[in-house]
Image (cartoon, rainbow, N blue to C red; front, side):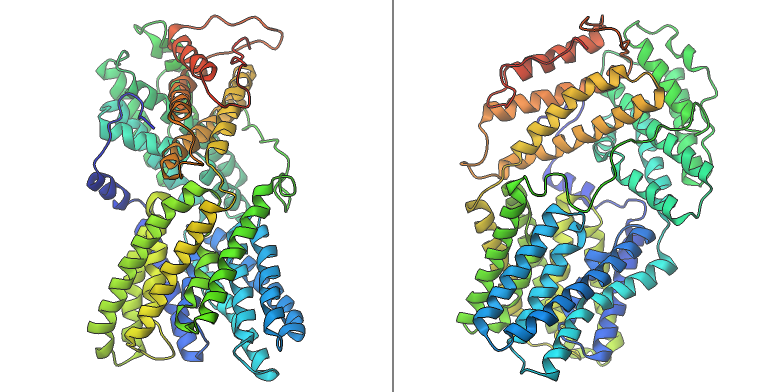
Length: 632
C-alpha cells in the first residue's frame, strides 16, 4: 500500500533495524521467557521426560507480555491438556493394537481440535492441544500395551503441564502487571504524538503511524486483566480507560497535522501542546495521573484557519482528558458478551476448511515418515500444528519467515553442537547456552508480527538441535534430521494451504472497509464525547488492520490474488479514510437530521469525495454500484 503523504518508504536494512530496535519491556520479556525455558529444560533433564526440546518450546505459547495473561493461559493449558489426555486414554483402549485405527483416531482428534483453534475462544492453545493429542497417539505406536503405554500418556501430559507450571511460578514472581504494561503503552503513544507535533519528519510520522495502526485493543485487554486482578482502585481503572480513549484521539490528530503540510502550527502553540502531551506521558508512565492541559481548549483555535479550528479544540479536549478526571464516567462498551464459539463458527466454511487442511498436512507428514522409516524427521508432523495459518497470503509470508528462522536456528544449533556442547561438563553449562539463545529468540519473538515468527522458528530449530536427551549430546545426525523435518513440514503446509481452498485476505479487507464506511455515520451521531471517541478509536484500529493486510496481497498466488485495479481501489479507500477519520471527529449530526447532508468544510469534504470516488470505482465489491451514504 502506498504510504500516506508524509511517510517515506524505507530500505530493507532500515526496516530490519527498526523491527529489532529496543522497546520498553522487550528485554524484560526476553529474560522472563528465557528463565521459563531454562527451568523447563532443567525439570525435564532431571526427571528425564521425553521430548525435552518440544517441552521447552511450549513455553513460547503460554508466555504473554503480562503476568495475569500468562497465568490464565498457563492454567487453561493445564486444564485443556488434562482433558485431552483423558480423551486419549479412552481412545487408547480401542486403538493401541491397531495401527490403522490409531491413524483414524489421530485424524479425528486433530480435526476437532484444529476446528476449535479456528472457531472458538480456545484459539491461543487449541493448536498446541492438537499437537499434544496427536503426539500422544503417535507414542502409543512405539510402546507395548499396558503400564508403559500409560506412562507414555502421562509423559504427554507433562509435555504441556511442565512449561505451563513453570510459567505460572515465574510470572507470579517476576511478571509485570497488566496495568503497568497499559501505562507503558499509553506513554509510548503519547511520546510519539508529541514528537510528530514538534518535528513531523518521515521517521517521526512513520513511528506515530505504527503506534496508531496498533490500535488500543491490546491496551484494553490489559485493562480488563487489571480489573480482573483487582489490584488497583476502580477510580484509577476508570481514569486509565478515559486516558486510553483520549490517547488514541491525541495520536490520530497529531499524526493528521504531521501529514498535512497545509497546516503548520505556530511554534509556541506547537511546543506548548507537545510539552503538555510529554508531561502526560511521563505521569502515566510513572503510574500517576496526567496533569492534563493547563490552557483553555476553546482558545486553541485563535488565529488558525477556520477549517482547522474545530479539530484543534478536539485536540485540546483530548489532552485535557488525559488526566482521566474530566467529563462523565467512560462509556461502557455494550457489545454482547463473547461466547465459547465465534459467531460464525458453524456458518463460515473457512473454519472447517482450516481444520481439514491442517489435519491433511499433519497426516501426510505422519504417514510419510512412517513409510520412509525415517523417525528422525518426525518434527515435520509436529510442525504442521505450529505453523498452520488461515489465509494463503499469511501462509506464504510466514513460510518465508519460518524458513529463515529455521535456517538461523539450525546454524546456531549445529555451531553449538560442534564448538560448545563437546566442552560442556554439567547441566548448568547447557542451561547457560539455552538461556543466551532463548534471550535472542525471545527478543525477536517479542517484536512486530512481521518478524516475530523468525524468533519462534529460531528457538524451535535450536532446541531440537541442542536439547537431544537427558544429558548434553552432539549427534549431528539428529540435528540434521530434525531440521529436515521442520523444513518438510513447513513446505507441506504451504503447498496444501495454497492449493486447497485458498483463502484470500481480500475478503477481510473488503469487510473491514465496509464496516469503516458504515461506522462514519455512528461517529457523527454520537454526541457524548466518550462514545464518539470509543467509536473513533475502534475505527482507527480497524483501519490499522487494513493497512497491515493490504501488503499481504503480494504474497498470494495469482489465482487467488485480486487484480491491480482492486488493490488500487482499496488502497485509495484506506488512504482516504486515514485522512478523513481525525477531522471527522468534529462532524456532528442531530438525530432528527434525516437525509439532509451536513455542510462539510474542505478539510473533510476532500477526503470524503476521494473515498466516494474510490468506492464507486471499486471492482468486484459485493456492494458494487452502491454509492457511499454521506447524507447522514
